[in-house]
Image (cartoon, rainbow, N blue to C red; front, side, top):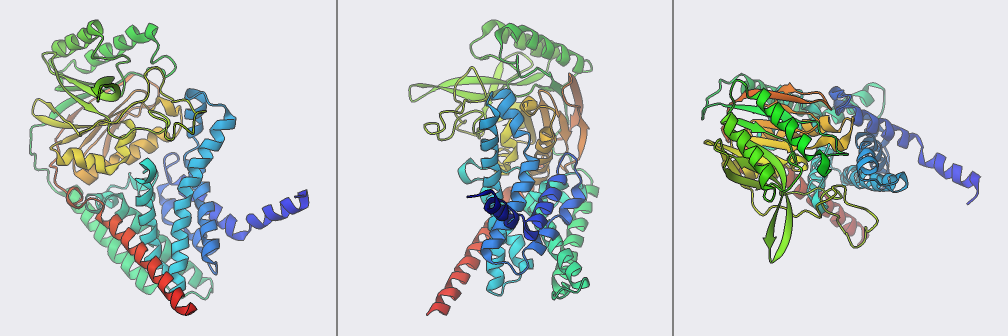
Length: 520
């Protein structure tokens, strides 16, 4: 292929449709932390919808892919910090791995626009098809091949408390539905005003207004309803040790790491606390094996007369083989070990290598321990009568795990994490935004202890009452009122998403059947 041919094909690829799709992707990315311009989500899809006009399903898939690739390339730029700085991958490997994930996620955007155009060809309006398809493919990507439920459109609205209260009915998918429908209504109104042969969106606008008014009414009702305490409040202290990732697992820094957490815990507990929480892997050794170091932690719990929850690697025998776990241990005020919760959903490339026999060139990012295995059960820990559901790092992005803990009796969700991997990027803030939805969905407060930040407290309405800065030593104390454990979402789960998948399946079968009839 000569240069003229190459540039001709490049020009054809970046045509008007592609440029419109790219602008949509940019606005989607900007709606997330950081810069958190959440209002952009409500108009971000308008250029994409313009680009779909008169397109074939194949072209619709292409422009959807371009939009998704642009958006996720900007949202997930921080993956290269993880891969190169801490995973020690060369840029020549990091960029392709990063782009593979971006393209994988973009494929679901492409599938949504493809189904929408197919539906239109069968006489089904996009105001119905696109929100349904968007939810269906968001849901599928949340579990397919381990799943990656990161940066769904609804997550961008985590600060708009009246809006996100419907998460206790439909999860984040309810908010995403409103956003997509808003974009369609505004797009159709804009095109009608500018003289395009598109009618005014009277029915879809009426539907959207009905839904948004109902959503806001419900949201303000939830926010203004008086609290009805089910249990006594718990005074908690969250500790942010700010241990550099480069030295975290070095034996020579082990003593100073524990010194830091000991000092910060004593400072935080001066006025008395019921529970102290340290981050994921705060204890950089096997607590089960290091008797002398373990005694320091037991003494701390006794001195402060508090429950102490901390992250530490663990091991156990399964089928005669030693198995490594990413765990959280609980000590009582008497220094006894009263429980251990194991991480249930592991991080691909971080805690295990998917397709390890094929991806032999990728080293695991967590060094010095070996491949982890997931925990077998959702274990609820008891802190003096207050039931805790502990989610370790990445698994807080999966709503089904929070539901499992709350349905098992947890009334406070505890997220312990080590976001040092992300460096000074927007990823810790994106991570926190997603975690806030777990509190609303389950009507259960969430407390978050992060090694380098963001350490935070989220009440059952999603309000973030305290936040630390990144990469500083810090501690935060708060009075936590355990949640009620009562929400429709806890009972029905992702019913809306499953219905969307079913509807998309029916649309595809309907299109296939009509085409088959036409061919006969």
